[in-house]
Structures are given as C-alpha cells and as structure tokens.
Image (cartoon, rainbow, N blue to C red; front, side):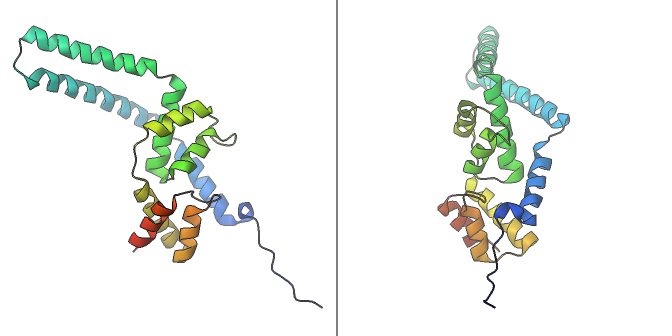
Length: 182
C-alpha cells in the first residue's frame, strides 16, 4: 500500500468561505432608515455650502440669495447628470468599503459579477473612480478579523489578503496590514 496524499479541497468547499459569503450578503442589505438619513445629510451639506457662500464676503442680501440659489441649482444639475445606475453603483461600493472593509478590486468584481450586483462595467468604473476610501485601513480591518476570528497565522493572513481568490488587496496594502497587526 502506497502513502496516501491528502487532497486539498478547492476554496469554495471550505466552511469559512461560505461563512464569509453569508456575512457579505447580510451586510449588503441596508435598512431604508439609512437611506433617508443619507438624504437628509446631503440636504444639510448643500445648506452649509449656501451659508458659507453667503458669509464669505460682505454682499447685499439679494446677491447672497442669488448665489445660494445658483449653488442649489448646480448641485441638482450635477445629480441629474449622473445616471441612476451609476449613483446606485457608487452607493453600493461605499457600503462595501465602509461596512465590509473590502479591497478596491474585490468591490469592483462584486459590482460587475453575475452572482453579485450585476452592474454594467461603466457604472462600476464610475463608482470606483468616485469612491474615496482608505484601502490600507480596510486591509488592516480584514487582517484583524482573520487573526481574531479564525486564529490564522501572519503568513496565512497575508496570503489571504493578496489572493485573487481572497481579498484582492495590493501587496502594499497587505503589508501595511501585517506591519500594523497587533
């Protein structure tokens, strides 16, 4: 009888892959209350801009009112220029970045995936170009999660962070996470 080699399971047959998938799916759904809060916040931001414009230089009340109306109209025009699907892709990307601590590449792949969000490539590209986030911080959060919840070794965490089948962070982002992992 020859020695038996242990056959390595494909990644999708491991229990932790499905656990992560369930967590991702659960985090994707957002309550309607958050959407209403974000809308209210956007309105407040517009009002602040109007107030700042009106108080920057001493002007007559009529001039300040005209400027604040122009700022409001410009803001509405910019929002109208962006297709709904583009802004939806950006909102979804922001959610993945903030709540799931995903990498830029992983978010893009999730947005265009036939098993994910199914956004067209141009909408996903728009989202990624307009998404501002600290990717190193996301890599660190993921590394901390792997270390705490799965008791993974440092080298295994690094491999998972940079893997094309894992988190898809850049080598620089993954190294930052490993260097700052406590």
